[in-house]
Amino acid sequence: MLSFFDHLRHLARKRRWSADLATGRRGEDLAHRYLQRKGFKIVARNYRLSAGDAEADVIGWQGEELVFVEVKTRQSGQYGPPDRAVGAEKRAHLRRVAREYVRKSNTPWERVRFDIVNVILADPPEVEWLPGAFKV
Image (cartoon, rainbow, N blue to C red):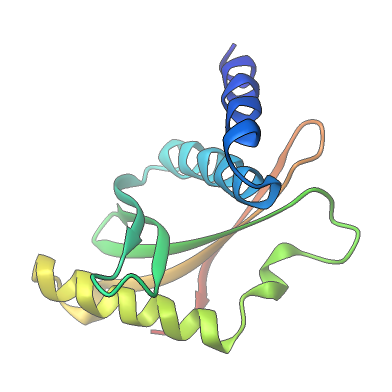
């Protein structure tokens, strides 16, 4: 039943947003629910720096770790796993977001982790979680 409503939400987004933005948001929805099932307590989605130039797709707690998650979504795996698109610049942006969020939440930097979630929108969608995808 949930996938039916996901499909309707996705169709509505495609009418309002660009195809890439709608696809990315659908992947974030799937990743969000996947991480919740894995025990994450999600505290923020699409968290932007106050300057607006960097964003974390999902922020959540897994046990004692504050996790910043980049979600990469593709229509197919034809060109390799989506996480290959997370380069040095994107990692630097995520670190900047993490520094601001950690400062505001008074979380020790030692408790921060960076993950990536790959989403391929096959039928059914494939979700792959890469904990500790890159170093703090």
